[in-house]
Image 1 (cartoon, helix red, strand yellow):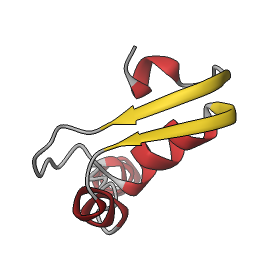
Image 2: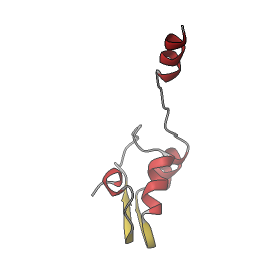
Image 3: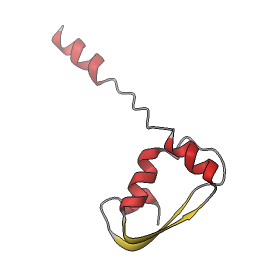
Image 4: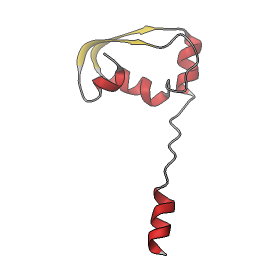
Length: 74
């Protein structure tokens, strides 16, 4: 099961397995979600470098919401 599909669920043990390469999808938010799914133990499968890169990469959310609100207001 992927971390995304596990969102909102809780498990005794979780294994967090990253791609083995730099990926923009590996972010601190993804790591946080994976870690918080475990109630007892987490097994990390990856390198310290992968973890460090993921923890320094945040989700860059780009939304057109502010532009749409501005257009609606005239």
